[in-house]
Length: 433
Image (tube, rainbow, N blue to C red):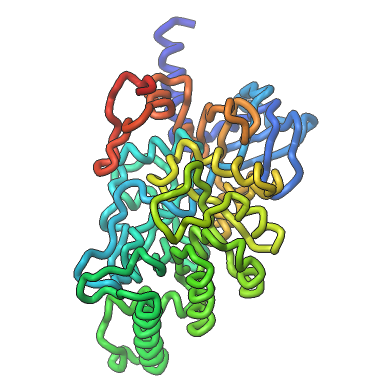
C-alpha cells in the first residue's frame, strides 16, 4: 500500500470518528465502572454511532469488523456529570433586580471558551451551567454536553420534560446586600421568593382557565414563564444554600408551592440530613481542601456526603468551577471517600446521581446499552492522586487525549493558566507555573 493511500485511509478513519463512528470501536481489558451495575474486571465496551452498543466481560463477543483498542490495566468510567459550574460565562441577573428569572445563561455562555477544554481534561462530559448566586433568582441555567460546536445550541441538552435547563435560586448571605431592591435579611429573601411564586401561581391559573382560547390568555410575561414551568414540574429549581436553617427554609418554600428543588452546596446538610431525606430532596455538594471564603460555610465538613448517603439522600458532587478546578473533579469525590462515603456511591456521585438531578439519566451518567457513548479512560484507580485522565469521549467522539501536546497543556497547566474572566488558556508552554 502506498504512503499516500495510507494517509488517505487514516484521514477517512478520523473523519468517521468525528461523526460518531459508523464502525464499532471495542475497548478491551479495562476495569469498567458502569455506575449502575457491578464493576466489570477485564471488561469490554463497544460504541457505535455515538451510542453504547455493548458493555460486558472478557467473554463478550466483539462485532465483526470492529476496531479493537487495548486498554488493559486502565479504568473506564461514565462521562462525569457536573451539576454546578460557571464555565463559559453564564451570567444572569444584574443589580437592577434581585429576582431575575427571565435572564438566561443561554444568551451569555461562550461555546468556544477554553474552560470547556479544562472540563474535558477532568473527564467531565455533561455540565449544568449556572448563573451566579448573588440574587434570590439569578436566572435560567443550561444543561450542556461537551461536544465541539460553534454556537451554544450545538451543546444544549433538554431534560426528560423538554426543558434545556433549570432555575437558579439562592438564600443565605449571597443575595443579601444593601443595594435597593435586594433583601437585607434572610426573612426578606424568603418573602421576596414567596411573593413572586404567588404571582406565578396566579398567572398559571389564568393560563389554565384560558384553555385553548388564546383570546383569554394573559399578556406574555417573561418573568412568569420559567416559574410556571417550575410549578408544572417541567423546570427544576437549583437552590444555592449553606446553613441548616437556610436549607430548612428551602424545604419549606418547595412544599408551599409544590416543587422539589435540588439543594446545592448544602454545607450544613449533615446537620439536617434526616429532614432532607424526609422531604425526598437531592443534594449536590461541594468538597473543598482548604475551607474558607465566607462565614456561612465555616462548618464545611467533607463527611457531608457520607452522612447524606447514610440518611438515604440522593447525593452528587459538583465543582462550582472556579471554586474547584474542573480538572480535579475526581479528587473531590476522593475526599468524600476518605470521610466515609462508600466507594460505589462516590462513583455515582460523579455520574448517574448528577444525571438524575438534571433529569438526563436516560441519556447520560452510566455505561448502559443505548445510552450516549460518553466515557472517560483513566490510567488507574479513579480516586488515586496518581491517576490521570487519559481520554475523554463524548457521544463516541474523542474530545480529549492526554497524549496530544495541545490537550496535555490544558491538563497540566498551573496556577492562572486560565483567565477567569475570558475563560481562555494562557499559553505558558503547558508546564506547571
